[in-house]
Amino acid sequence: RMLMKLLNNCITYNPDEVNTEFKDFIDKPFLSYLKHKKLTDNLIHYILYAIAMGNSEIDCHEGILRTKRFLSSLGYYGNTPFLYPMYGNGEIAQYFCRLCAVFGGTYCLKRPVNNIVLEEKTNKPKKIYKEIVCGNQKLKSRDLIMSAAFAPKEFNKESIKLGLSRGIFVTDCSVLEDEHESLTLLKIPPIQDFIETVVLEVGRSSYVCPDGLYLVHMTCRQQKDAFSDLQPLAEKLFEMNPKFDSTSAEKTNEEDTENVVKSNKNDNVKEDENQEETKLKQDRPNCLWSLYFNMPDTSECDFSKWEIPENVFLCGGPDLDLDYDHAVDEARKVFTKMYPDCEFLPRAPDPEEIIFGEAEADQKQEDTEKVLSENLKNDEKTDIDKKADNNVSTDNNDSTDNNDSTDNTINQISKLDDNAENVVRTDSLSNEDMIDRKCKDIDKTLDHK
Image 1: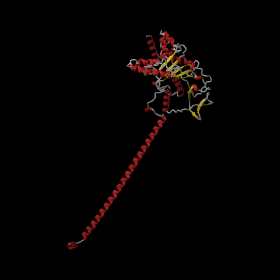
Image 2 (image 1 turned 90 degrees about the vertical axis):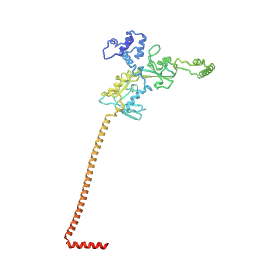
Image 3 (image 1 turned 135 degrees about the vertical axis):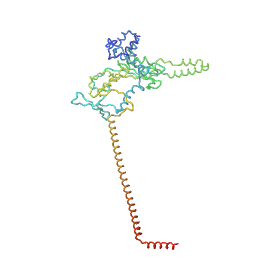
Image 4 (image 1 turned 120 degrees about the vertical axis):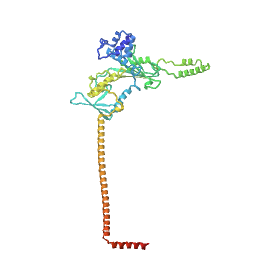
């Protein structure tokens, strides 16, 4: 009940509200609060190292926030509060690279920086970054963001004293065997000869290594060197000097074969027992490959004391924490300085919502409207020309019809004139002449017959 009440107080904790539960422990270690709740040493150990993922030195406020984050993450994406990227942590950086490239970001790959060119200005107290030199090329940009581990010595004349000891191991089996292969996370407290160390083991399920092999990362604060700091823990977890004797392996295989033959003769009664006896029992994973190295810890550096140009921004390296909260906070601060009027990490748009630049979109809209306007004018002009052509053809047809009718009228008039002449001529003949003419016509007809 005491544990459930404590966890409930942590998950409902709001730093913006006045909380009487933690007001007397805000400036004290989280360990003092846990002891005040009269928890057993075993429960305190689990809360400090397994839930809060901290140590006995973290303050109460930080311990409460870490416990709340752990509890609120349970059941969010599954039974575990942890998420691990497929193909390793390097995919997270590649994701942001791809997202940046979609919105017009340019990447120069395989281009090591040889020099950083700075220039002095009369109205600026500090030097200004101008460009970087990559081989025979010079790349210019408005700002420069870089890791503090690669910063020139001119930026910080004092050497970085803090460091991390890291070890990478390849093993043939898991530290904690399970039916369903999963990641293994260990938080080693500073007990006996061990330094406080974070151990992360990944297997085939994360596509980091092939089936049958495991990759183990160890990280701790540097005390001496990486080998001296991590070797005691590595020897405790792994068989660091495994002996693979091919001769003994061949003898074992021969014995297995003989046992199988004997068991077949005895109606396969003792086959399973003989196989179990000849099976190699392995207590610890065999270390097949190992690497130790040290690296500077710049996560706690105060860059305000460094002599950094105004348009150069430094970022700290990895720390002992498993999450990326420190990196996200640093990225937010740098982004706010570079773009104070923009939102930090807005929601990634859907593919149909992506517009490649507002200016370009406005220009495309103007070009489209211009083309549509010109097409409309051309259509109106074509209609006017067609109407004019129709009127001209109609006038021609009308004139042709008028000419035809005039000709017909003239022909009719000429026919009327001929008839009139005939009538006049007929009227002018006398009756005798008419009789004589008819008699002549009759005579011609008779002669013809």
